[in-house]
Length: 149
Image (cartoon, rainbow, N blue to C red; front, top):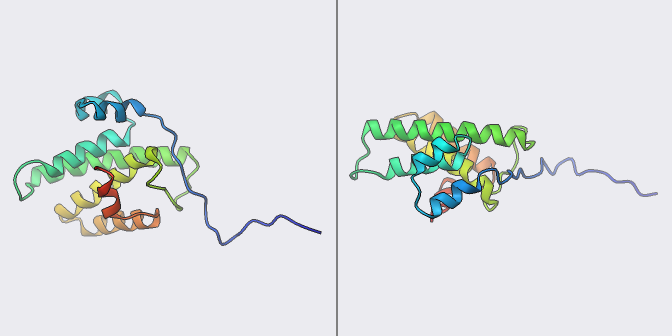
């Protein structure tokens, strides 16, 4: 007699977000203003992540407090929009969020930008939590930064 038994040690399946905002990715690819895209598509983690990344990259070698705080706000918005999407997709607080699935990348990039901005404003615990979240999702801060290329 054969029985089907789930592997109880396998953990939750990967969460794959739907491609809800392809127009944001297309707009970014054609040089549209990320702020306009975020305003037009506020549920898109990718638009907020790009705003955070551009803010973190802007200006001289040393980040200013205002720039770091602004990037933190953009990144936190993208992070929370992504958490909402993950939950709608069945995510229950843990498990892989594959970075090679393009619709997941906006959330992961927002989380990476949040880690960086949190570190810049002295929120060390938050930066460490974000980096741990990335690792628990099956990726790393360096891998997420590479998604920008």
